[in-house]
Length: 175
Image (cartoon, rainbow, N blue to C red; front, side, top):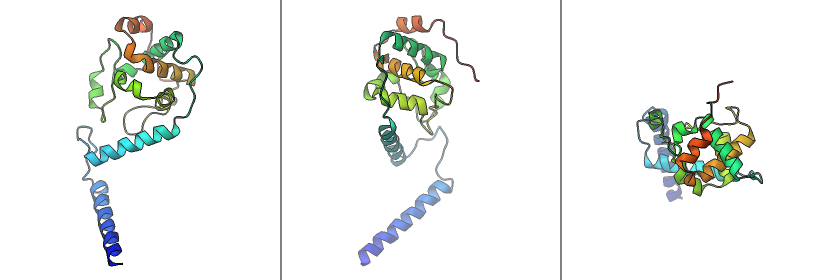
């Protein structure tokens, strides 16, 4: 019984210590401050589990066909995705270096994510990362699916193809 009381007391002290650390302002929310490893680990686990749980939409039958990928490249360009994630032949904007955590290089992560996961992330965004909800930005589901198809194909898209596909694209304006 004494052992359980000791464990309980330690848990209470640890809880109070964490509360003081976070709610007392000792934890820096500055984008220039690195998160403690435990915070990075926890946020990564929570993000991954949330995406895995909620990403259950099935892609349309046309997912990945050439027309959809090209439409996705145009939507990707018009919504400004390349500003943070880059694109074939397009560098990230300098301001994306101020985001924390860093926006992922989609060429590197596209293979690890399913079409449903890409769709869910693009549609809903990711809280506390700078990744916006494209649904709330006015994107329709068919546009979001096309962006997901483009991102899935991104590792094999050439600079010349991306430039050709997006040559006449105008940025989306706020509604």
